[in-house]
Length: 499
Image 1: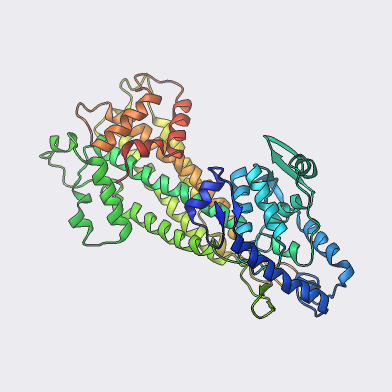
Image 2 (image 1 turned 45 degrees about the vertical axis):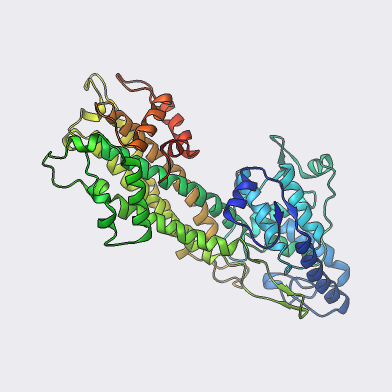
């Protein structure tokens, strides 16, 4: 991929998860050089400019002499690299490397091309700086996490490479890469930004899209297993309240359910209405669909933005301080997605109850063919309930909190990194809950003699390839974990075919 001004979500995933190499565009290099020339002129001219020849944060009024500018940038990185917690996953760090390069290559940050090239060299080599997960408040960007990223560029800290965590200096030497000696403003340009939040959100959005489609499929499978009505998914009915997400989800449900032999078999059953967890799937899942669409719009903007401070305007020679590093847009987006994804888990767990409760399903209790001696999938619903309840805590909006930092200079913060990390946890929980629903729905379909809708039947048959039908109790956890892998990878959804 040639990196210039913009980065699509598909490009992001192709690099971060697909391992595609990235090369700096010639036009981007020219912009970087022009912006760097402005910084060089400021250093030569001697005027006080924040971040170039002053201290940082509360020390913005402290002037630093030209002889100490390299030391100033070095001190900034080492003093800010004080994050804690477990290391971020490699894919999150890859996203940070890429997004940091995207922001710098816009030509408004004042770094040398060598800075961007080293970020891309590490990315292309699969060398990932070790970045602790905690320490960002999401205001002056993700300062502490990005400082750990920058630490590797100057040969300090650690890098995960070839499956081993090694001193950064050793990895750079092995790759024949020269550590940077940071020049004026370069350290600040590396750590002011929203790249941890952006990376987490980009990955989460892709996973949430797969999860939503799989939740739609699970709901369709449950509808078939419970002799549910297809009528609530009619285009003309949903079209009378045409939120885009509801329309899209209803269409996908119809796609999964097409050709069903089960639906006609109970046309005259006398049942008037299904419970909300079946009947209102287009409206509930559809709201999540719309939240994902809004998140995509936010990330489209973020992935083409300059997020450090101060910013350089080569045309006028100005260097202007602002607030582009503040993570509020991403924080609100993360919080909205937390709720939207958690709701997929909430309604999925309710469908599990519909499947397992004999008073509601008309099927054997807990889907055990020989109940009493066997407990069936009783505890699968317990696990789903536990995860849904944990999500209720995690879904509380992180962005409503703020705590001042830097002696009240940074007096309102976004907590966007908190929200984005919580979103990743919620996603993992809901992937498991939806997997449990698929496990239960497949078992319920075993009691059917007719073929389900085309998409549902295909998914059922794929599930049965890895999870045999349950005649008697067994150790269910390995089955659930295998099924969860298929859900996470989008395999079950792919087999069923998207609508």
